[in-house]
Length: 142
Image (cartoon, rainbow, N blue to C red):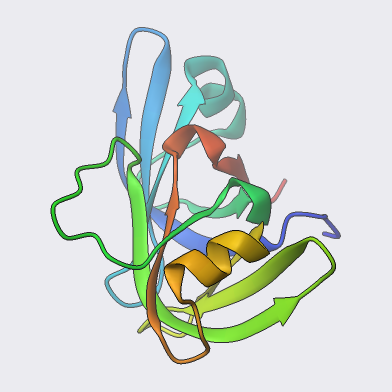
């Protein structure tokens, strides 16, 4: 599959909770990393989502926020993946950074130069990738 989303994670559904409109899907990646996705009940049914099924989770880099100091902060975003900045590439307007998680998975984020400077982001620094469950798109092999 070729796709423009920078973040492509393969994992296994470890929990699934249907609601009246949407279904919450917990995906376990390598290590202790987990991603939560929210999909419509119709999508869950059409994709045949069940516990134990292998899925691909996609997240656009522009949907990922970067957090460098979480002390005293409560977030409504369900996904917070913490690691180290392994690569920082500066463009004319934005910067792209890669956060390598302890499991070896990499999360990419695209943020402004101002944000990089304000947060003091450098390669090797601790950082967390933050994104909403509704920003996760799920795919399965047909």
